[in-house]
Length: 215
Image (cartoon, rainbow, N blue to C red; front, side, top):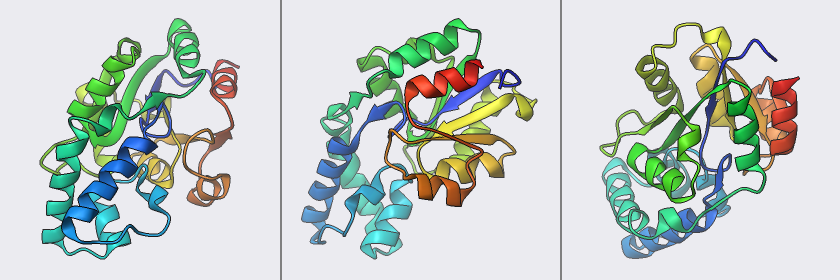
């Protein structure tokens, strides 16, 4: 795997376990709007909020915009820190960066929130660039975020870049932009989801991810 030089990491479900904050903010926003919690709220972990509110709560565009606004009001002050770094992730990042890989973040989370989270938990310095969605809802799709990261860092050789994430949208976004994707199983996506999406590699632990990439 030494053909890769740049590694793009998803955030939620890959670097940090953000489920408590996301579920709490989801519950808060739906209660205010008078909607019931959907079945399997864990489906909100990873994909863009705009898509999830529409698909899993049956909201129209106007309702989606209001739900996202309410969600982010709580998330920006409380929810983003109801979160924790996965065990062994800092060690994985240390090994990869120390071995010469360029590390970056490509997340569907608003870039400002991503920066605050990574800084709060002491792992921001591992990354050359932290790319995310815009607060206004633009650059919302994973492929758009990936393109933003590649463009911002002037990366043209896409064969040297690997996306690393836990959900099908990470795989789809990578493939749409011409990248390969490593699916990881310590996050929220299942092996079935990642294989069905077409992940190029699947690993179970941060240690295994580092070992495979350094092999």
